[in-house]
Image (cartoon, rainbow, N blue to C red):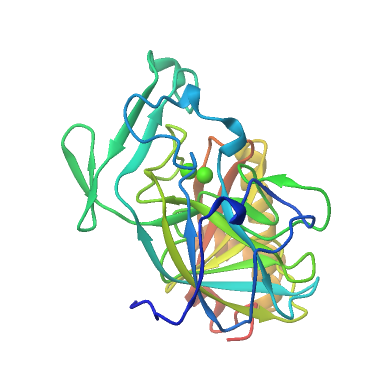
Length: 307
Ligand code: CA
Ligand code: CA
């Protein structure tokens, strides 16, 4: 999508970055629902890795996973749902990947720490092994403030946060809970490319810009963060283990489908078992995240939100 030069821009300047979702964060700006906003984001290392000599070990932990915001959405009140339409994602070259001994899903195989720059040109990512892949930019961190307390931006949860789900991409709409007035939306941690699982512990980490537009669903509560794409609805949930996350997301999906279609729980579970797809988002964050993909045709046009 062409960026409207009159759209408001939220810069990635340090004063606009947060490291925890919290109702105590003062808003960096205020927007109206329906207004297009361009949000600049830092990479997950906050730009501290610029070359192969900048190893992960020297990165300051106080500057990991910055999210740009929080953005106060006018009219958003607790009990509403905030719909965030992702209109456009642009990434800056190069991306960065790090391999760190004993981190990630098979960290015992990594004998020395390495930082690898991944050039991004013309929509292509140049990966190790002379492999060139199409880039599919996505948002790793997107969330609203919890009702109380604070949640580090590296942790996923019911408020969204570090969901690391590759379906959060251009063209999708993310539904997040409004827990505090203004919702306090923040986002960051773009990936030029990431596979399900994010097994190394990172995607192709990159700074960039996201153009988004919000919509308020007054008085509508969803059971968890939800993503809508052209073809499917995804419910996303995180727990300490993949097993418990999977069981919880199936439970929430069955309940939502049963309510929306006005069918019995076991009938909803039939549909999920026949045509739902349980998918892994990531297995390397403090909680593990899964999603249930429900094809839109199963809702027969009766979505849980007004269309
Ligand atoms: Ca992440
Ligand atoms: Ca990341």
